[in-house]
Amino acid sequence: IKDVLYLTQSVEPGKPAKFQRHHVSQLITVDFVDEKNPRVVQRHDIEGKLREGLSRKVGDTIYVVSEKPSGYYSGWGSYGKIGEESAHVYSYDVRDPKRVVAVDALKLFSGGGQSGQYKDPKGENRYFRGLSISATSNALMVVERWQKSSWDNGKYESHTESTMRMIDISD
Image 1 (cartoon, rainbow, N blue to C red):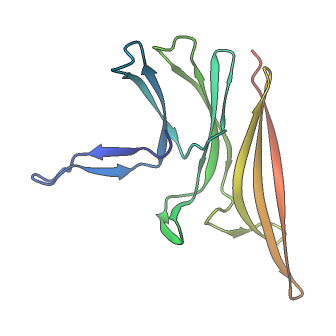
Image 2: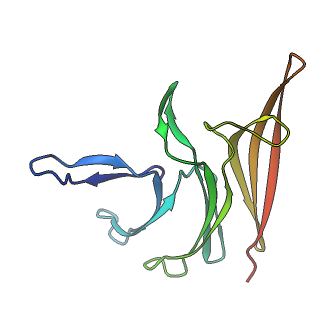
């Protein structure tokens, strides 16, 4: 589930509980034995946002790639800076569906620029634009997409750059 909200009770007496954003997503295990009454068995918090197509199952392991933007947006409005953007790969052993186990977390990168633009060593602006994932039985491939732009002698230039990371997932 992408961008989970938690119902949090106020510490002040008489104040109602309210939903709060903690900038996490969740891997949820659901038991459908009784189809009319599905039951949540487990929840695993995942830092950042999940997007469609950024998970793969290889054997008994699920790999999930999450991205954490430096801020949240809706339309043209910003909902504040939440820190430095980053991307992670999480792995979960799903051999026993009633007991999913978090195996590992690997940070792919930290910093870059979705809303927090910065100048790279060449003096260009750099913005994070997204991730793609592909998997084989031995490797996970994650591609980061970046947009770079600069002004040079009064001329604006912009191009897209990709970085692919190969992660060995063989046993």
